[in-house]
Length: 196
Image (cartoon, rainbow, N blue to C red):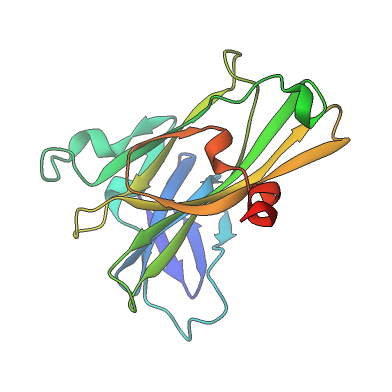
């Protein structure tokens, strides 16, 4: 597709609307969440972190969709292994102790790449999940797999109950699984800390 990168702007020089799922910034993938849609002849400024001085930005062809068709379908990248997805499921529901009905769980998920001391963080976004068993209690989040092959994510957030009258904090936790289930095990239990 006809895309030009000028600084941190992407210009769509093609005659069709395109959507970009991610860009490469200094050889590191930056997931665009939500994806950026650019009308023909228009340009969009990329959300590049300010701490990167004059970054080298590349829009890989496999990151571009036209009219809802992913160009990734045309690529066989290590058996289609470039993009993968993590499934986030909320198993929390009604709980009298915390105020009754669950409104929603807000979960922030960060993809961690590298080993201790040299970990790169790629925020995948914040997502609202509804009560367990309802539509919206599970979400699949696409992301670009690191060459390292290990999938590790930091999960943090809050569960809101009783029309947001009360909430429980989800302790930041690192999970190395592509299927993450939010349960009460994630709650920061202050009572336990007092007892010990």
